Image (cartoon, rainbow over all chains, first blue to last red; front, side, top):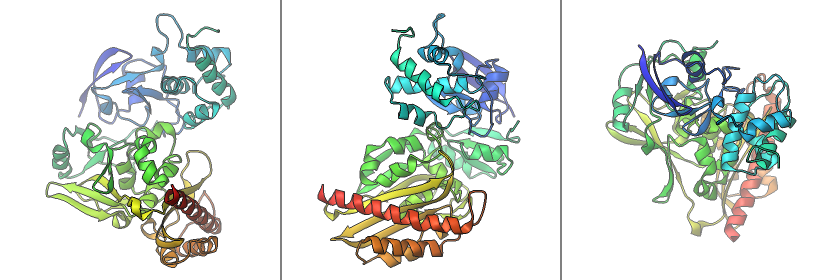
Length: 159
Length: 294
């Protein structure tokens, strides 16, 4: 059995015939070639696969592509707009928010969601919202700083 | 690479449609999927057909109606955590939801899904048992109501049968005139977001410093129906004192059945039950007192 999955990803419409068991992360990476979202632990523990599904972050290894049918998805590829990095991306550059970079796409998608809800989050709030995501380089301090940098530079350029 | 085994997929367009599909052999509800999909990857669950109910907005609500707090089965953990209404009547829900998995998982995992998963380490079963909630199970023949204390048949097994769907959880809201009702949840986990090593849920209804009704739920320690019934019996009618809380907590620790595993040995878990039950009762009393004087 295959089913038709039609989904808007980063503002563009895609449709593919896939097996119902296909996970959203593999749909994005293998079917659509959007490899910015990383496939990590496969057990919804690490969070490197976080994307937005209908405006809310989700661990894409733990939803079926079928569940995204008719919905919208936003991935890390959509953070940069018109050649302008999202302040979150700039923050990760400014504050050395990544080392190996594997967890970074998921961290940034959650951070963007947080900042859209609360433009000035306290450090504790940043730590809480990222608590389901793992950085094996253990660069958490710099990740928190990066998100704070983004909060303080909402236009993406140093003030 | 972990991939579920072959499965077919149907999307329910209404509750009636879902019930029709669920009456067919080997059909299983897919809600948030945050327990079911990992189980399918591990081949611990191999349903033939998934019935996706995520589109059924009519099952996603938290409201007060007829003296009951009514939680739609498809309400997400984050909805319960964000609900002022729920937190105002039952601070225990916010205590528990703060420590269920992590914030991203809480956006998708559902209240009904947690109960139906019936994982012995799952937090909400003990919480709903403590507050004496009722599960509303829907079928084409109508609704039937089952106390949460009778909802679980055992690990990963509930009374929800073929052709049935958990639709709602109802909790009687303490009448304002009653005053002096409080609740709390205390959990110890190895790290943030992990399952409980042990946890205790407490609900107290006080009358001039005496325990009129007590609800005590236990997570992950093999308590029958997640309830510490003997400890509740012990407390009922007693003064709500630290001494009695400790004594009741000791009864709870003696009557549960924890097993040694990677989260700790049996005696440590019993120690936690005694300590966490005491703390939960203490906080429930503090909140009850604050409510009564508020």
